[in-house]
Every structure is written in structure tokens, then in C-alpha cells.
Amino acid sequence: MARRIVVVGSINTDLVANVEHFPSPGETVICRSFTTFGGGKGANQAIAAARLGAPVMLLGAVGSDAYGGDRLVDLIQSGVDTSAVSRQHGIPSGIALIQVNASAENTITIVPGANWTITPEQLDRELPRILRSDDLLCCQAELPLETITRALEIAGRIGAVRVLNVAPVISGVRGLVPLADILIVNEVEAADLTGVLDVGPESAGRITEVLSRLGSAIVIITLGANGAYVRSPDFAGLVPSPPVPVVDTTGAGDAFIGAFMAWLAEGQPVEQAVRAGVAAGALAVQVPGAQNSLPAREALTAFLRRVSAIQDF
Ligand code: RIB
Image (cartoon, rainbow, N blue to C red; front, side):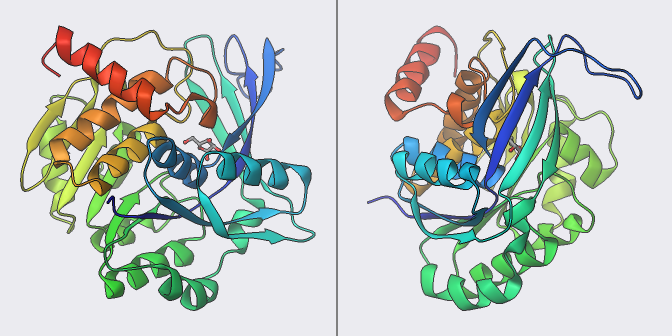
């Protein structure tokens, strides 16, 4: 029986404009296509793990607008327990304004809305009732800093495994790293946290060592097309990504984290969990949108079988 994953995190609606190039300050560009997707790092990671068969609960908030209702439907249809998602009246749901350029890169501006109504006091009331010592608790940095801090503190007291994805790097978030058992960052976030600018496959080993000195037993840096580097007591090394055509990288990191947690929750070794995460990310970048691109279990296991047969994966 898999352990449960409890995500305390954000729920957004992603308004995505595909542009040839990002506008410079003062410039206006015409977008080639516009789409609305379910998003938010908390919801994405919860859905990513649930689509892979993990038992997942999300503690979060949406507003009373139509977006909020749509996001709840997405979560429920993906199998996420939404009993700890509140609906805030008179407050808009979280929005992410996303531009994707012709090279499949993105820029994201977040309007937190209801996500920022979740307070430490609410967690004091709700989280101890919800969280069990054998759960994995997962947080990102799209809720207020003091709320994330409290979630990690409560989880530490209860004895749950604390997974922290420092994304985005908001002011003060470095102070949370010692509260995490498992730290997951991308290249940009690793550079922000350490001040080392050349984050890549060659430097990742050294940088994970620096980050692990802050207190996390497992540190992972996701490296986009280069895969991910993991430092843990059982395994340290680079897990390369299979080469794939890239359409949109939005949500690829969330796909990684969802799959990594789902495998870990099933009791799989860290190395296998990272391989599943890298493969999930490689599938996600081939499809537009965040939640839209998160693979189902059958697709991921078939892909893992295929890539293991053709390379040492
Ligand atoms: O990680 C991708 C996510 O970041 C998007 O879905 C967007 O909502 C922002 O939270």
C-alpha cells in the first residue's frame, strides 16, 4: 500500500499566450495562439502524482469565480482528495500569466488571489488533523512564506517526510531549506540559493553538496534536457534525460516532482524515483500546458520501458 502524499500548495489557472519572441520593455507583440490550462505548482504536483496512482490530498484554496470551480473539477477528475481545498467568497482564484516563445521557453507572472488566503493559523487548525507520520508532505513557494514555514514545522513535529520545492525563489525562502528532508530545485533556483551561476551537469554534484549542508538528506537539481542530479545517502549521480522534441516546458518540473513522489510513496529506491521523474518531465515537455501535459501511469511506464531498452536509463 503506497504512502499518502499531502500537498500544501497553490492552485492557478494558466492563461497562456504563444508568442514568437518575448516583448522587450515598451514593445507590443501579437500572440499566435492563446489557451487556458489548469496550473499552479501545488495542483500540478498533486495531479501529477495522482495520475500515476498515488493517494494524494491537496490543501489549498480557490476563489468563488468560474476558474475556481474548473480547477476543483480538474483535481477531482484526476483523483486528488480536495476535502481540504477551501472556496473563498469574493476573492479571485490564482492566475498565472504565461508566455511561451518559439523556442518553447516561458515567462510566468503569478497573481496569487485565493492562494494567499491560507494562513499559518489555518494550518494549525487543519494540518494536525489531516497529516499522519507515514505521509509525505510536499510544499512549493507559491503560498505566503509564513504559511509554508508552518506547514513544514507541523510536518516535522508529526514525523512526515517533508519535500520542499523552492519554486519560485521568493524572499526569505532560503530559511526554509533546513526544514526539508528532500529539497528539489531547478538550475535557476539552485543558482539563486547558492550564488553559483554555472549550474549544469558538471557542477551539479558540487552544488548539491553545498545545498545538502543546509540540512536536507536528499537534494535534487533538475537540469531540463540534461535530466536531474540527485545526492542522497543511497545514490548520488546524474540521471540523464532521453532526447525528446520540446513543445512547452511549463509544468515539466511539476511532472518530475509528482512522479518522484509517487515512486517514493510506493517504496521505490531514490534512484528509480528520480528516473521516473526525469521520464515524466520528458513526456510533459512534448505537450502544451501544465496539467494538460502530465502523463498517466500507463504512458509513463511504457515510456520508461522504451527508453531503458535503448539506453542505459
Ligand atoms: O510550474 C508551472 C506552474 O507555475 C504553472 O502551472 C503556473 O501556474 C505556475 O504556478
